[in-house]
Length: 185
Image (cartoon, rainbow, N blue to C red; front, top):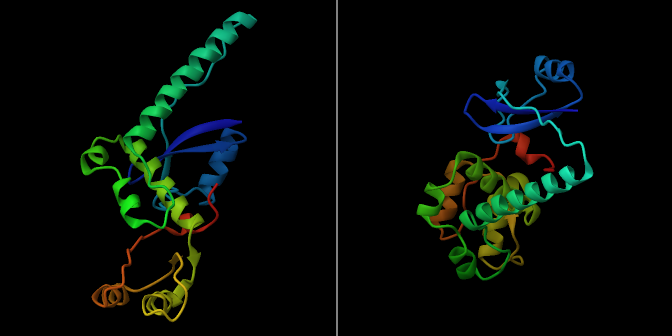
């Protein structure tokens, strides 16, 4: 199994897993590789160091594993602290207060920002109902009390979105590339 660091033309970095170099080249030639952030098919390999397991004794492996776990835990803790995501709640005020500040977002590395965006998109996709092209109608029905309020997502033109906002209906455009509209792993 080959794990490659890939990058699109917009400099989004992501990981790809392939059975071999030939498998990577074949998928690239057939246009099967797309950036998970923007859907760009212009994908290139980045330089990456191979992982070499050089420890020969059980003690060396245990030491290496505990060092690796500590490093990983510290890294994850730093990422979680730098980019907290709002918890799922009906209380909008609590959700807004859980958002990172503009300064915290500005201090994120591109990879951290990309990970936070994907986490947010996954959260939206998992916690909303897709109503497709009937989004403006469904949003109006909920706003005017004709149907029960629920979390929805769908398609609306910029003009429809502006009309909804003018009516006082809280909507937020969230442009997603087609690749993110498919099941996320």
